[in-house]
Length: 242
View 1 (cartoon, helix red, strand yellow):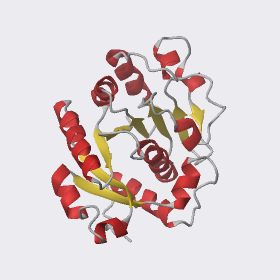
View 2 (cartoon, one colour; view 1 turned 60 degrees about the vertical axis):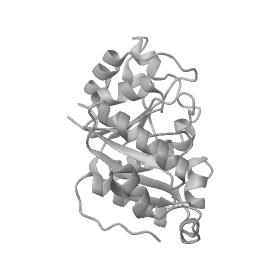
View 3 (cartoon, rainbow, N blue to C red; view 1 turned 180 degrees about the horizontal axis):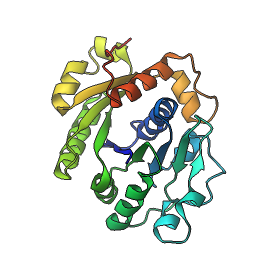
View 4 (cartoon, one colour; view 1 turned 90 degrees about the vertical axis):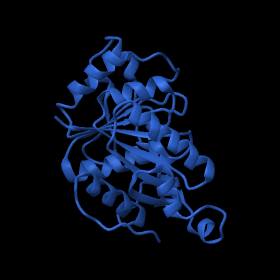
């Protein structure tokens, strides 16, 4: 059985889908097949980030309804060998938690790691938590992001997901040194989850997540994603912020 991780956030626009894809790519390069399942119809972007735009004919609702087999809706991403994507529908619809649980449990037998790119809606969160073994909680360092991430952490715990690791995304260090945003210790203490990675704002990531250019293999951003993936797999790698 593969590991099932939910990527969660308290609000939209913190980069959750981008992190799901690029961390998934790093996991695939280390440990084999990885599937990213998108549940966020409202912010649907996984096809662009994963380079599968125009290739995703079916979505998760087609699978859950029994219209098609999962293999017909799952597409391999060119971002990394062994990285696969199952997209959300264009239009938000209700999600059967029981059917979703059965689907993810069966897919967990085929993939070494399943990442559920959840939405902030309660329905999507309930469904993701029903089968998640752990969570990546994504926040930005601004006060609104911290407050909403704290609420998301509470929802994860209420739904019996206790292994929660924090990612501080889109960090601009000068905003902390100038006093615009609080320091990282304050962010971590306020949310109360163990830090697994800090991802600075980056033109490389912005270009890659927009489908313009691939993320350079030699880039600092790629190394950050690789290190997060290794920490998820149990390696002890020191955290650094530059």
